[in-house]
Length: 260
Image (cartoon, rainbow, N blue to C red; front, side, top):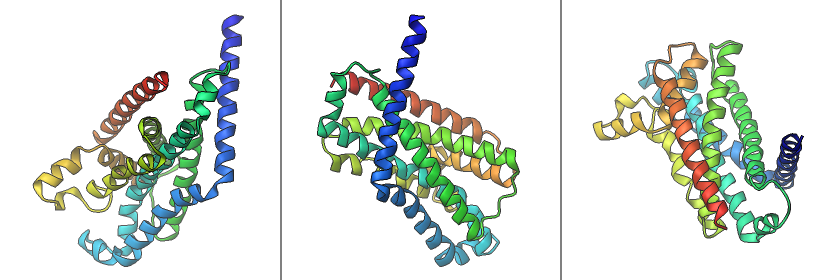
């Protein structure tokens, strides 16, 4: 009975913190617009300005390049979300609200859980918007319902991992400005992988990095699932990267939270 009551109270506190985050999202819609808007701008830029030339390099046209680049843009959306999460956590830390929560009789991890769940909903909403725009500009996936669900599951697992990384970065930042700048390299990693051009077109050293950094297997898995082509070992690598980032970031965030 006691265990059941404790679990119920923990769920209630997590739901309360999630509602708090969703109210922040509603109160500051500009952040959600940025999360979806920036990848859309890059999508339009690469398809309509560079797509003809890059598509010809792939042996196709602008439409073929839209199909190639769409998975990279979807993962770029996930990378952009880390910055928003990091800033939101840093704001809580600098404004003292976390210290106030720690004096209250609430489930302690619910503060971080609210940030993670709120950012997940915001990120997946942004991914949905970017996917719709990608289809409108020429992205033609061949996957059925199962392929789409598997691709969205892969994106969600990687987003969950990067959002926990954003939480850890936000808790470790000394200011909101630092929290907004630290995750910036994550937004560039899709460019240094297979998101925009095949890795075999790169110089050897850059190609090695591109093929072994975490975004590339996730992009290749999503691309394979959406286009109905074999995924190979990319799916295992994508899940392994997601699990490793979640584990490391969670331990980092909890350690920082317990030392406040």
